[in-house]
Length: 468
Ligand code: BGP
Image (tube, rainbow, N blue to C red; front, side, top):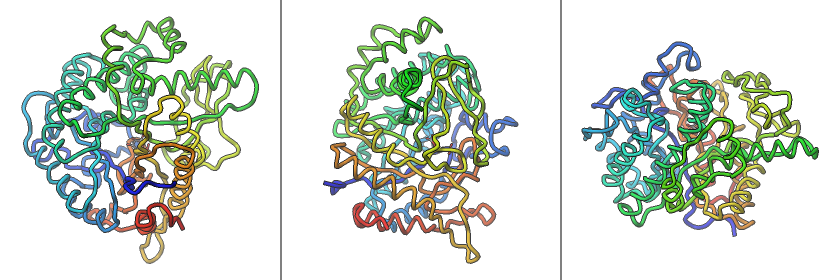
């Protein structure tokens, strides 16, 4: 048992967070280009204009990936580089950039894993018809995906359609922390459903255009426990899964919604609007794998007192996270048995194993861990070395959990750490670091390999045997 021979030891980034070059070579404006410049929206006004300047330094970055022995690199395509207005004329400079990146990766035998949508929607589509709120986007997203399949599908086998619909829809339409900054549950439910239909349409195109490829979407996964054995807490846990977990996995991977939650939402909000043909389409669009982004678990309790959304720890002051919940359904409380990061995310390697076992039971599909990692302010010693031991400890324990899961029968294809290099955290600026490679923001974005870089290199070399 253990990791299969061709296990994809990978690492991930996303265009807006790493590329920079926000208006270079004909790139159009995305909703994040616009939103991050509105005062008060991001941590200390940080944005991705320059990010890690990967757009201009990709060769140097891929070279260090190659030296590390990385087997897979997950990155996203900026829709606005390919189609500056989201539709219409193609920007061939954008195609050229991703072709160069892909070819560079292949030169080092690194398998590219492409994410088609990692949240940087073309601003033009937002302005024209409200972006994901309109069914018009299904056609435009499909066309964009087809352009990518046509241009890159000959060399790229692994594709992720949408990254974390639950996060960008939840933060964008329930609590107004991401663009377009809306707080409206009905609209949020409509948007979520439209993403699931678009996902299905894209899978259908993929089957025709990249017949030997593998495709799935990535959901942010927070497996959970009940705070106690009381009937109230157990019901809250069921509510959490139905409304916040299966609500997202089911339409993407089963083509349907959890029935009780659907009834609840339709009665309470009159949404989502589901057309008969949607279900047929979603059911017939089979994914090859489930992508999961896993960082932490949740502890769930009854929420009769009606706790709603109370904010997030976005500055790394440990313990500042307040309880959040959905009135009448559930609330998330602190798990006293677990250690937490400075951003108040529970560290729970066994939650990853447990979570994968749950997915296998419900969907019986192979799994790709498309993100897992530790966000922290890394220590730099007097010699300028970055000994990010906390990150090594975090990753080691999660890789052990993967091994256990494989031994329990989970078909795990790969493991991508978040992130390869230090990059922009959407709401936490450059302070919250995740990478194997440090970017000196005071010195021309010079790269430096951290201790975790050398550690992961050994992990890959030994196919997950040498974790010390
Ligand atoms: C996921 C996103 C990533 C990344 C990561 C870390 O939700 O897919 O893009 O940002 O989380 O989150 P954060 O930067 O908020 O710590």
